[in-house]
Length: 229
Image (cartoon, rainbow, N blue to C red):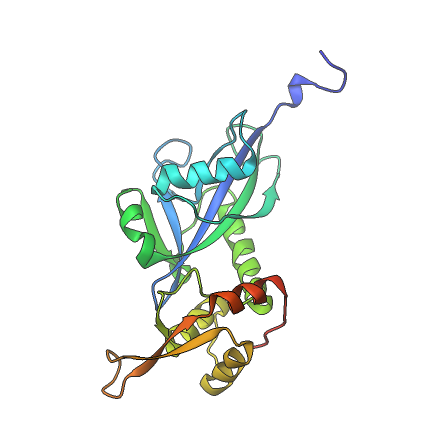
């Protein structure tokens, strides 16, 4: 045995994925109903164990695809959870990841997985182990990200109304925003293209549709700012 490598100190490494989605009204998180013990039948984040030939990023992408059928979603590493008794079966350290996606775009692939379900953040059940803590940290990270980067490209349809964008920010920040102040703040970021088209579903007058300016949006992502709403 090589000095310092004690087999008695062997631990399992896991990844858990927090997937946020927006349905034009509400911010939601994707959960699965666990199909094995312990905690069989209870709700959980999507997770799995690291394989010998994988990086953590590889494992997170594999777990997400296996449980949802979804490819090529950007996952951001969040936090490591290493409490000694966090898993009742074995000593396990888990690294959490989070992602934000458009529910409408991916829901068909996800709906094929019968044990996966979207939950509003206000209706999340008690989760297994320390998964509620993981979710709480992910929400806080998402809110901090909202204050220093534009957000919405991954969560909204290609064309959207200003009201939809405001609803998204309100859902993430969990507070109502003044309409005039919000519009002024967003316009000052110079990331939207106003279209001539209107959404006529909300009123007879209709609401103008917008698109994100990809170039400006990416530039704002690279150069942090502070957006106080």
